[in-house]
Length: 360
Ligand code: ATP
Image (cartoon, rainbow, N blue to C red; front, top):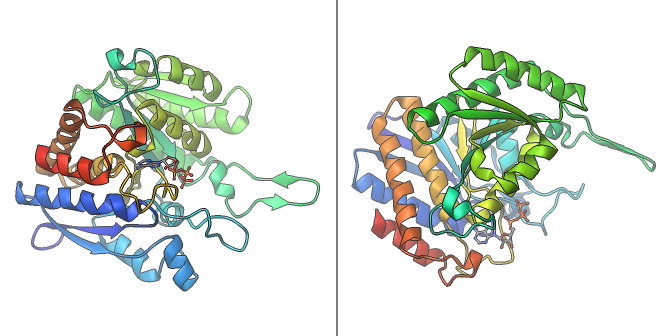
């Protein structure tokens, strides 16, 4: 935090619908500024596929430096399917930032906002309020760019380390405890793995069991990822916090985003010991970009998560309250009947953003 008590926020709008949902989110944060003691200083910087087209790099050194110096990083979706590196992979500065700043805890909350349709029968009555924690720097993704492919076979290697797993589990138990303290959930934590088949996951579960002994107040569970997937679509309301390896988290967090209405509803954070990136779960959605159709809710709720993280890091209760105010404003807007085009309604980006601003 700088001398004038302003939080310095690095803003990377990204590609496709990224900038379209970033603009209204910054407007909402400026409204928070006007109606609270919080102050923000936003510095915008390039990253993504369009920057790659212009310069041959996913992001300049100056963007990485800015992210390092800022108090938090707000990121729009990055990458476009039509823009590729010579090896045919997409431009993904978001993944590079995870590795660069060691952002091992990918936090993917899935809360069904009352009024939003869920594909799960009974969810409107029972509610959904869970968090997937996806380890974000190793697992199968440790092999990114290092896989070996010959004419006859391909190999990618999964990595689980004690150093990262122990920090990941501490983070997960702490989150479960914070949610319980806020009366938000039952304080449960589920370890999701495939410990019955792979030694690496048996190792993962063993470290989870050790961490559980240090947090006897948190109710714990252990599930295999296949069984867990079936339970998630049958009884998502039984879950609270869930922690898992990178690839499993990549898949399950998109599924849980689907449970709460769609990609445009889901916020996310990638958190390390010193830095954190906040961005919606969705991609750049080239099919709807430039049409005003994008749902900005996931981006707006990511900004609320950023305020909660800043509050925890700096011991500033006012920032947590501001985050909750944004969540309540979003809830009100949906309770009042707004319906994003994303799920068949008539409301585009501008309508949703305006309604949240008014509700604030
Ligand atoms: P990535 O690999 O970058 O995550 P993706 O191809 O998996 O991207 P998205 O870009 O998220 O997926 O798009 C998937 C579908 O969801 C598309 O049809 C897109 O239009 C829709 N979608 C994604 N985000 C939003 C949003 N915020 N509002 C409305 N629709 C969205």
